[in-house]
Structures are given as C-alpha cells and as structure tokens.
Amino acid sequence: MPDKTDTAKLTILALDTCTESCSVALTHNGQVYAEQADAPREHSQRLLPMVQNVLSAANISLKDVALIAYGRGPGSFTGIRICTSMTQGLALGQDLPVVGISTLQAMAQEAMDKHGSTQVVAAIDARMGEVYWGEFKLVEGIATLVGNEQVCAPEDVSRALDYQQTVTACGTGFDTYPALVIDNMRLLSDVKFPQAEAMLVLASHAHANGESTDVEGLTPVYLRDTVTWKKLPGRE
Image 1: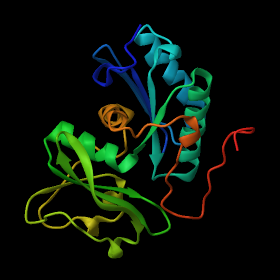
Image 2 (image 1 turned 135 degrees about the vertical axis):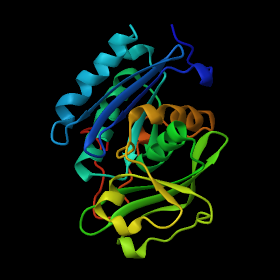
Image 3 (image 1 turned 90 degrees about the horizontal axis):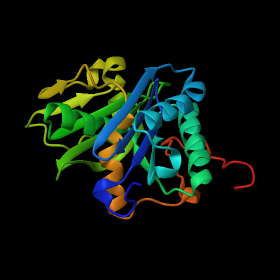
Image 4 (image 1 turned 90 degrees about the vertical axis):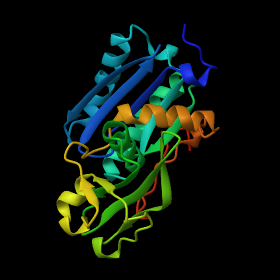
C-alpha cells in the first residue's frame, strides 16, 4: 500500500488533454509510467483507457493513488473541459485530492528537465490571432512563473525575463508566430505540447505547499473570460 502522507513518495496520477496531445502519467514507488497520443478529436475516448494502462503497468488501482494532477489550462476550451470533467469523475469515486497544473508551466518544466534550461518561455497557439504565453525561471528545480500568464496578440506580448542571457522557447505558439523568436532565444523542437509526465514533479511540489484541494476546488484556467466551467450534475 503506498504511503499517502510522505510527499516525496506520493503515488500521483497526472492527466492532460488541454492541447492536441493527450497524455497520462503515474509515479509509484519511484517509478514513472506514462502514455501519450496526438489525437485532438479523441481525447474523451482515449483518456480513461490510458489511465487504466498506467495503473495496470504499476500493478495498482485507482484506490492506491494519493493525488490526481490535471492540466488546468490554458489551451483548447474543449480539451480543458474534458480534462477537468475526467479528473472530477476519477477523484469523486475515491475522494482524492486534486491539483491543477498550468500547461505552460508543464512545458517549461519539461524544457528545464530535458535541456538544463534556467529561463524558459512557453507559448501555445490560442487561435483567433492570439497566443497563450508564460515566462518561467528555474527555482530549486521547479519552473516558477515570472509575472503572469497572458493571452494576447503576438505583438502585445510583454517580456520580463533577462534576455541578455539565453532563454529557451517551447510550444506551438512559436511555430504559428515565428516573430515571437528574438535574439538569445533557443527554440526547442521536442517540446511542443504539455506532457503529464512533466506535471508529476510540479504536482508533488504544489501538494507539499498546500495547493491541492478536494474535488470541489477544481479550477480550470482559460485566460479568456468567455468560457465558464460547469461542474457535473448534482455538484453545482
């Protein structure tokens, strides 16, 4: 039975469907199990089988999980809804705490973990001529937001990092709007979308800092204010 009190040894399930990528990851007894698929119109069909696959690979069930981390956005409105609803359903059944992880932060964390970056800009194409944008610094192993996450036209992006030093750039926003790439930026080709595996360390850190909540605290982040989150029937 996993230890549900020692934060460093938590069994954490992470899931994300906020972009074209659908991903699930699990950490259990020091091992990480992960699945990912590029299936933008199949997230709702693929997510639960992927959850079952990683649980089976670890030889555990959902009742052995201590915490569920979910991609809270920003990203696709539909994708965020799917991720939040699935998390709510999974957490309700076992009365599990949940913690929302920024998709931009997850991308920055992956860039830092894979490439040793200390300053990262993550950008996701937000459609309608806009971009979701966030800047992060490495602080004690964690991608830490500098300023605020933004949704804006590319020409309105505001920058806060020290661009006299090399800044790593990642995400589909740079493919869609190449003008976002400026001097001293290193553009990564292997970090395009948030991955659940990168959310695991962020979830552990957030939980240790008291940022996890019960299922009533699920909070999707759209950045645009034109969409509202509706809880499952009977949970309003």
